[in-house]
Length: 360
Ligand code: UDP
Image 1 (cartoon, rainbow, N blue to C red):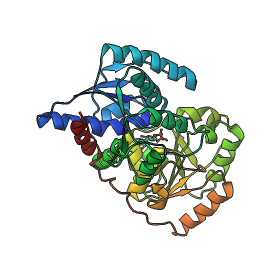
Image 2: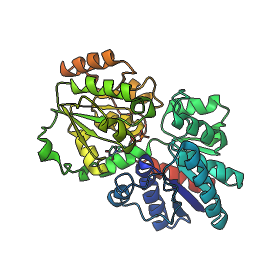
Image 3: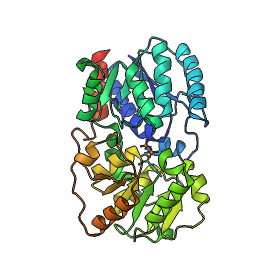
Image 4: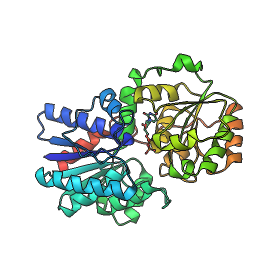
């Protein structure tokens, strides 16, 4: 069988790496399965793309569609035009999309209009928050896809409720955690570790990039003020989207140490050694749960509820007071222990590939 695998933005790369490895393992054991890797070019910055290919040993994409930056519509349109051309020239049995970025949705629409089957890895998760661009991407993708590889029983329920048939749902676990568990022994101190002069378990990590937290300059400045008072140094790898409002801050934070986005192996080292993580990232909620690190999520909802019900995650919402309260609990050593969600065991990609081989 022939698969076209789509990746476009940073959180996609951790999800495709183990799938490619599982395909290569299947090939070596004599299975007839081949893939074409399409990079849409949605993220093109070396720090958000190239470094992940190197560290996660992802082969060079067969094509880069060069979508580049732009508004939601501009990116969607460019990806669709270029992917349509590519898919017509390179027909396939199945397009596999991962996650919830613009590329996920755009390539799904193109594939279905060319009568090509689509599998969605991480299908069925929902925040039920239509102000998130990712929620729209999830709903459109899942309303068109044929097969769903899911990370949780909640995702399975969401799909059933929207009319997806049982035979289309494959509860396999989490490919992002496959990558985490594979790469854990290789993590390394960030280059700036000694310059930051931080000690293991005596600092906090911060990542923020959701429009609802970083696009409004006043709200962002308020978060910075509260987080600056955490009482520990805060390492903040600043996402390109966040940079504009960070550099415009009138009151420069004193305890927040900003840096460029980190490579995967450095970032995982940083969170593994931290006392806690404050974030609005989807993937980071999952990684902290598996690493057993307290996670304070600055959002009102999560499409990954198992990180709260099973893991170490707590939703802080938009509430500056709630953040201070949660930090007090953290300092008092009162954080929940957490456990690892079902099937987040490092073997998800293997399960995906064996399901695909049975389907086709
Ligand atoms: N990440 C990274 N370097 C950083 C920040 C995050 O390698 O400086 C990784 C993180 O470990 C996770 C992924 O990027 O695997 C999450 O991506 P992001 O937060 O951009 O997207 P989301 O998960 O919110 O869609």
